[in-house]
Image 1 (cartoon, one colour):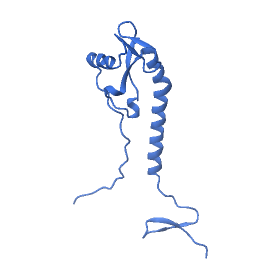
Image 2: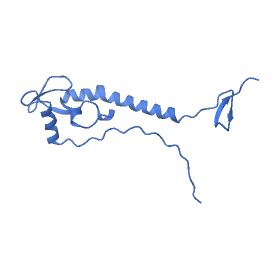
Image 3: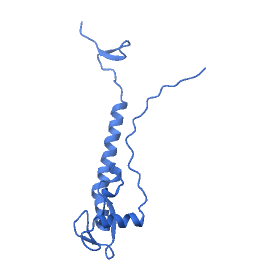
Length: 135
C-alpha cells in the first residue's frame, strides 16, 4: 500500500544572485570600461575621480546582488572604498532587510486560511465558510 501525503508547497522567493569570484582581470576590465582618462575613472557613487594606482577602490554593484541585481560587468563600476562601505550600510542593507520583510509578510498572508467568522457555518460542498443569513 502506497501512502501519499499532501503537503502545501511554500512559495519560495527568488534567491539573491550568486556572487561570481572577482578576479584581478575582471576587476581591471571593469575599471577600464569606465575610464575617462589614463588610469582615472569616476566613482559611481560620488562622482570624484578614482585613480587606479593611487586610491583605494572597489568594484561596486550598482544594483545590489541581494536585491536581485545581476552579477555582470554592466552592473558593476569602480568606487572609492569608503563610498562603497557607506552605500552598503546606508542604502543596500536597509533595502535588503525591507525586501525580506515584505517577502515574509507575503508568504504569511498566503498561508493564513479563512477563519470562521462569528456568524458563519461551514459549507462542505463549497469547502468554505459562509455567513448565516438572518431568518
